Length: 80
Image (cartoon, rainbow, N blue to C red; front, side, top):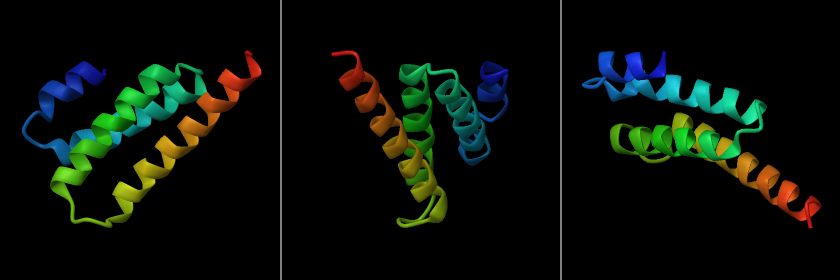
């Protein structure tokens, strides 16, 4: 589904960004942290290039990335 959205919205990145974020959140819940990180990073890059600095949608993705980093660090420290 995401690859289809990427083709449909290739020239409308702000329509693709929420889909990347939603799939990233799904991957996060599935504990597929590497994939989640990549999707959130792509969403963040789009939003930073298309929205003004400080926009709330940029902050939302930055918050998700911070939460993801925290969880990854916890998982890594528990596996030691």
